[in-house]
Length: 90
Image 1 (spheres, rainbow, N blue to C red):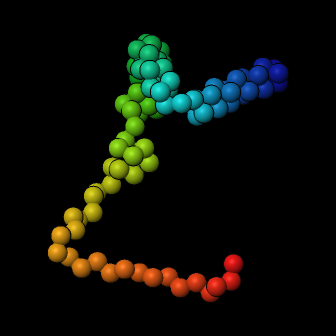
Image 2 (image 1 turned 120 degrees about the vertical axis):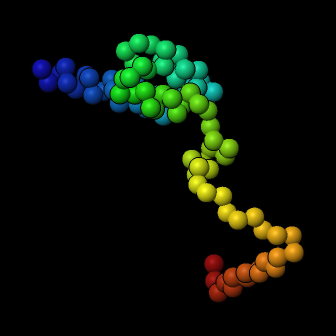
Image 3 (image 1 turned 90 degrees about the vertical axis):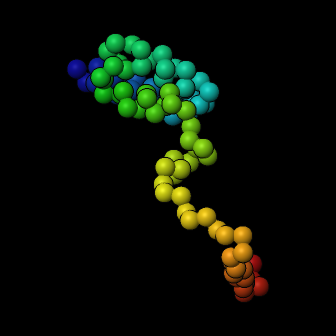
């Protein structure tokens, strides 16, 4: 029984590592294909992950673009310049 559990854990960890390290250009079509598989993509536990992967990246790929955008800066607005002093020691 123990070798079966260990083998299952190793297999699942391998799939996770492959999915995480796979380039997005390969992950996107694979996720779209897996969404069409009846047991996996349609109501399965991985459906949300696969939908996000198949949808493609955000504007910058940092997953922070869904935040509310900052107020636009007017052309005549004064923006201060901050200068940070260093101690000279490196």
